[in-house]
Length: 352
Ligand SMILES: C[S@@+](CC[C@H](N)C(=O)[O-])C[C@H]1O[C@@H](n2cnc3c(N)ncnc32)[C@H](O)[C@@H]1O
Figure (spheres, rainbow, N blue to C red):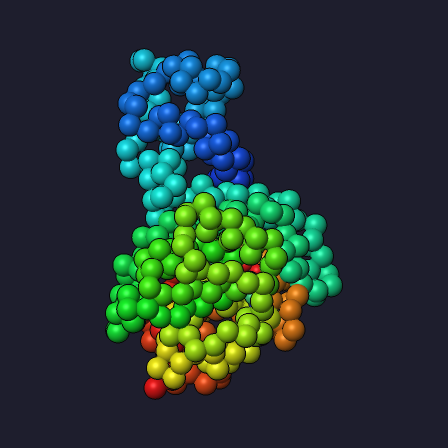
């Protein structure tokens, strides 16, 4: 017989999830309207005061914090009818440069809803969806989501964890950023290592156009260049460092991409492979980060790989063991975990 207590407990869990899904829209709206910026460090505000600072109508601006109070995003003082954004919530909701700024994840979620029909069809047909076929909110969402983590860690923690690499890049080296998307990591590398030359490659034409625009906006010099190219056919070679930033698992032929990189790398060169944090087994992945990645992987990463030749579909939760196997199959003899964060594992691969 079904245990009604268990049914109710699970229904409660799903109510929480549905509330989170609806609240995600509220959170994104709060960001777009500048409500978190207005509340950050401002102490207790009435909805009227907040509406005035942000030039909004008071009625919707009064309804919105009810959702945020119930969800624990803001605190409410009933005596003064004021709302406060706790200081600890500011880096997550109001600071786009913070490594825990999570608002762009909601842009990614929005793109999944907008592409729901296409994603459903993947299950029926087994055919993939190319990266560029997704709604554009995916591209800017991923860029904004990944950039703060790269800014905080790419040079300071990840490159520095690869012995001898930082010195080479400072002196002047040749770097490839394969699957560079909007070029966030390429631009950071070009700025951090002005004596080095950075080449960003990506299949997606629109991403490359945006990467070029971002480089101009960031006032990069001429040490960063973006080209439309697949991971298996860029012609430039003799690289000291080739980076795959959160993209190897999206590729149809990750072994082919790694093999091409091995040929384009100097004999003492390094691969920096940044991939989503993952365990090797599903049973060790019962946590919200894995849940989030499996959803993105089902909707975006696996279909992207299926849309390309080979269609290996490693998935965003491939884990270190499977990634190392792919790199070894491509001829890399040394694969080591150089660093890790809550969201990423960072592998260094060499032929040595
Ligand atoms: C999740 S995005 C990551 C973008 C960027 N590296 C970042 O961290 O912001 C994956 C990227 O891989 C690119 N990509 C997928 N398959 C590719 C392939 N075979 N060759 C080159 N780029 C590819 C996509 O176009 C997309 O820009």
